[in-house]
Image 1 (cartoon, rainbow, N blue to C red):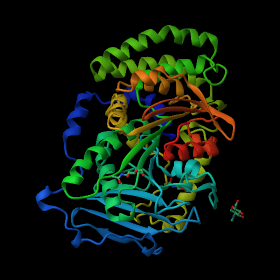
Image 2: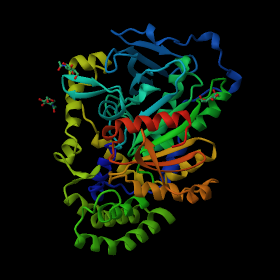
Image 3: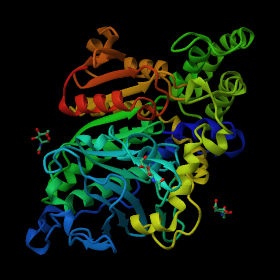
Image 4: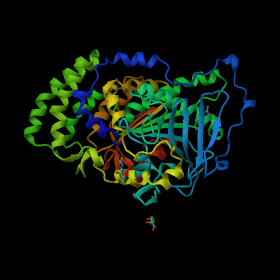
Length: 505
Ligand SMILES: *[C@@H]1O[C@H](CO)[C@@H](O)[C@H](O)[C@H]1NC(C)=O
Ligand SMILES: *[C@@H]1O[C@H](CO)[C@@H](O)[C@H](O)[C@H]1NC(C)=O
Ligand SMILES: *[C@@H]1O[C@H](CO)[C@@H](O)[C@H](O)[C@H]1NC(C)=O
């Protein structure tokens, strides 16, 4: 979510922090084993008799954690408790999935409709380094934090028709932690923990087994989600081999994602100098200078980041584009997450939304920490975003990877993809996402590209534009910024309901 905030913010300091690690290194890293599940071969097939899954959440205690183990995953535990908070009408559960020395914090809310039948949604915010508590308490969760002392029921929460979890990831973010100071600095590495998390969750809470599963995220989630979903998809083969039920990965939903870096960079010009969603916010003189810089920016990005990856050249290209295109935008004082407004507060302090500070104050309350079971080893004040994690991802050039390839690969395997974009966002805007989806190379590309953008409606009113072919849908939401459910709760819930139901827009 705000995620991208940091994306840009830190991008401004890339010059000094960027490590000179070539992108190919990421492929190599990707081949290493981090903490992914090492499943035994089929000769040691899973003996269901050894293990009694916890069918019913309601058996859990509200006062203390229940620790669950599984014979097949000797190094993994789940610590979970009932946490009567936030929703009030459904079961709420929080805890950690302990992956050896890594501990990922999650919130889980049952569906308000039919928890025993409804789909399961996975949600992560972006950053990289931002906590999913932002999405939970500000956007799509069952409650919104309105003051440090109170939260209010959100009738448009995405758990209206789905079971949903919010996860603080990677380790180091929000209430997630690691025992020995381990850190994660690339998305493929984070994906190993997420895939383990998902497998362990479904294995323990067997009533959700086989349920349609949707992986959703925002902002830097445009990088995370395609990679996480691919990891879950590939892991399924290993689960089957070990005699386990595969995860029923059905779709990815990416909100205001930054997925393809070069097209997003050049779209920053269109968004500030043309009436793509609001009237131009940039001075003519600056736009002329920018227009002249664009061909060079594109050429440099293509040569050093796309055709081949040369980290020094690619970072230099990034800096050039940024100084010509992004720096003048920040000088306008407009909110990079919503160009219909000015930024409220300093971006490094509030992310332009003062409520982010209120959420932190709420999560600093000892009674709230006790209710949700934050590990006692975490004593520091809550940070919406961990800037060290953010800097580590930038140093690894993680954002420069051509993540759109993962989306194409998922489409080819029948996994549906919803790319939705609040139209007033600048940082991961609709123009860049439109170009990214049109450029996706997959068997349905020709059909998708031939479709016009057409209006979609909620209650008879135009909600935005959409284009679809087969499993791929691109969709905009008028009047929304980077955090769509924050600005357009009703339309965003309607979008999710239709998507889960498999309806067209
Ligand atoms: C919390 O918010 C609810 C709903 O807005 C309100 O009825 C209640 O009085 C508030 N409680 C406190 C302690 O402010
Ligand atoms: C996956 O979920 C879909 C949608 O609910 C369902 O139709 C399908 O049968 C499920 N697949 C499996 C293997 O359980
Ligand atoms: C934590 O937050 C409290 C309350 O806002 C503040 O007084 C304190 O200085 C903060 N501590 C640190 C280490 O920043």
